[in-house]
Image (tube, rainbow, N blue to C red):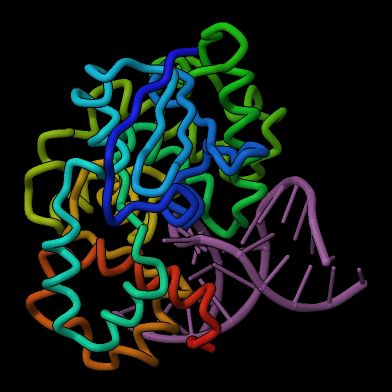
Length: 268
DNA sequence: CGCCAGGCTTCTA
DNA sequence: TAGAAGCATGGC
């Protein structure tokens, strides 16, 4: 398989792909990662500050993979802004290679519906079974099934996923998305509360799933998912909320805080 | 066995 | 309109 190199900064594969924002990347024995993006199987590894890519062309990197990995964004600038606050600076220093990804909207929505009241290994397992059972065979691996494909099914059809009560939520989401009831333009560009309200028409989508979808699947850096970890971290580290200058990129701050809260031991 | 997991819906007062 | 129970499944 052909590979090519891209110089990168402010980027770590492990910190980006294993910080809970995506569920279809697996570490291989050499420290690289394999994942499915759209209908492609991509392999990534790092050598110093060089990202080594196979599975798509340099043109593909420019047109979609860089955006997918968040590598089209200027994190030097984001970090400089956020580091004006000492606590944020510490959180960034703990995992300076995190980038907020930009995944497909439908996949992100569906994945975070599955994530509710669940743990990451089981979320990944359910998504694997969803893709293998209902996605398109791309030659030994499977794409994420389209909303239209799932909209034709019932919750009982999804029983092999063992997704529990979430199966009905997946079907409701698929039917609404396939019917065009979830307006992408509003999600991407309307004020945050309007964008959130569109997604929350779906059964099983509350504030947390909506914000994750906006942040990881729609490039809405102003979205700020609040799960149990973030609530705990905010109460302890930012009792008065984030500083105002951080709010337009609150979602980026959120990823640093989330990772810091879970992994550093500084947040009880 | 009981508790918990990147919550949400439904029921209750 | 707030607060708690119930929800499927699986790991510990």
